[in-house]
Image (tube, rainbow, N blue to C red; front, top):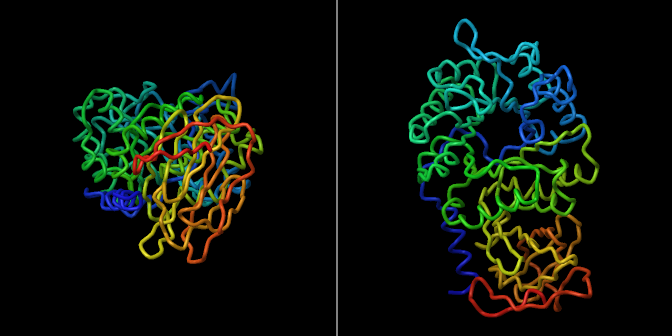
Length: 447
């Protein structure tokens, strides 16, 4: 089978899905916004650390920055609570309540604060007796809590799974989803359902999950390190045949938060996370102190071209199509489509630590891109435009250690260049022959 036919078949299978999906009209593209957990965790010490504790002030400040510094206009329109917003006990009517010292205005007022600024408001709870941090869970109160969230004007509900039995989740998560929908208020439903079952060595029922949840976690919590990001990338590549077909408009795999601008990622690694989350069609939920983020990291988060790939309306999650000796190539079909040919976002990911950029050289046809009119190629971080490249012309990029080159290959109807097209090169590059992942013939992406 030719490379083009193989990739076309893969795309067709991804597009067909083969499962019934939730259709509540929400999350037609991956949700975008700001979430507290990875950066601020469960810091409840507002006496000694008022600047960083989980409080209404923190969430209001982040909301103001989303609006004033252009994040909202780029699509980051959600501000969501995570664990530790709650009081230790329910109120006298059995309703959830916020910690009165840290949220003195109450949750309805915080929700209203977001809505007045054109933002969505998200909340956190747990399908268990307690949340992961030991606050009240929803078990025994599913309908009451769903109704409370609706009354509070919640737009997004993240439901964790601590202190519960994974065997009960096939019933419990859909039941809570039913009560959310029954309120009549549109609320995006984010689930941790498959994550807990996978770690209990259960096989998640993705048909049921897709029919219940708008997004779901299926791997570890992200930590503030490149090692953690790489483990997530590996999981999504190693399990792509099972999880990629589950993604699409209204239902998304969630590899967890963006940690760009925190402490653990270099500049190159931050670009790599942003690029891979775009390829994954992942929710873009920042967990960073927006008050102190450095300009170069803010620019990564606000890269409109990369966000456009993430938010592509086709909603097809990308796949790893090549992996060898620390170099990976990932491809995601995107719009526009011309004469049955998709455009693509291609990520060249360098997992090596040689200390020098690695040159990767391929023809587009070797990647499965065979549109006769060629592809207009643009580097989405550097903004370099390579013009129109025909399928059989060699395309070369230099990829920094632990870095990425993300290009948009858009189908065109014009004639391409008559010679190879390449980025500026570093003269000393490793040489190694790799195998074409599509037709198993030798080609050399380093030479």
